[in-house]
Length: 418
Image 1: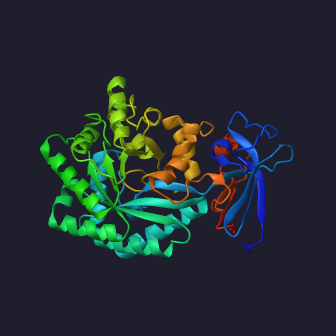
Image 2 (image 1 turned 90 degrees about the vertical axis):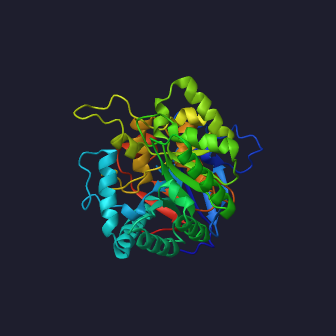
Image 3 (image 1 turned 90 degrees about the horizontal axis):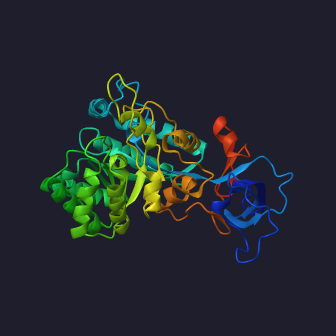
């Protein structure tokens, strides 16, 4: 397709994602958004960019298309995707997942990780993702081969999916000589420093490790993405440690707190105070309801009565940016998934009670996910934005989530073959 020609499409799009042409002029003649937040719109593009975003004055005859920006996966694990068959966790426990994960890590090869990443990125692209952040198990025999394979994938997929990489390991490792050398390599590749901070993590030792990690990231100018409080005990203990360190050692680099599951177990007033401190330090959260809904809150022989999931709405209302990610795909931590952002949205409806017809319910899957990754485009549909679209054969959210709608992609202004 010749992207220098003008292309256009009409359909239904979320009003909260649209910045129409002539935003300062009255738009009373346009069709108001429906109760589900969708409004009829016409998009025109040329040379890979939107040149017109026009709200329609008449909804009759508007095609049954739901128009979205290509979406973002803020938290994945490409290095161990699709390993459930090799390393199952039939009990579905956190400890069982960790044991199976460590066993698989001992034998993984560059070729295996390369194949997993290629399969994952093909699925992600086909399902409508434009960017992804993947954590990599970065300590042990499978670390080097995983980085080699995923750096190759990052390069080969650069034009289709922007791939960010995070070094995942115990935070204490960053205090070692080997950890400092790894941090320099990660920063040189544009990656982030990561780590795990789950109970028990009281006392001075985790604070010293966090302090060193923060200073190292600040020195290297790279972001941080922590697995923190993925737990059902000692609510918020990891975040309280992080906040204690930040009170004394504030930094400018962005800090993402992935999981933050046990925050939901704090009493409401205490939760509110913790959230206020998080907002003051500009912390951002990636909630992961599928994996945490599967692993946490388990009691042998009993259905869970309490599910430790990040308190998304309370965080948003307290001024903390929140994105929602899919996390694990067919590995010891979660047996399902296929890098489909629509499936993630659908399954998050009952788990996290996020409704995409509410602005706060849609943002974690769209604009906030893009902002957590600091992407150049936040996903709003406006003149000058990239012509990167996910076009669904549906005209309501209910249609989208009650079936698997056919979808078509526009990437850099070009319709992609089915």
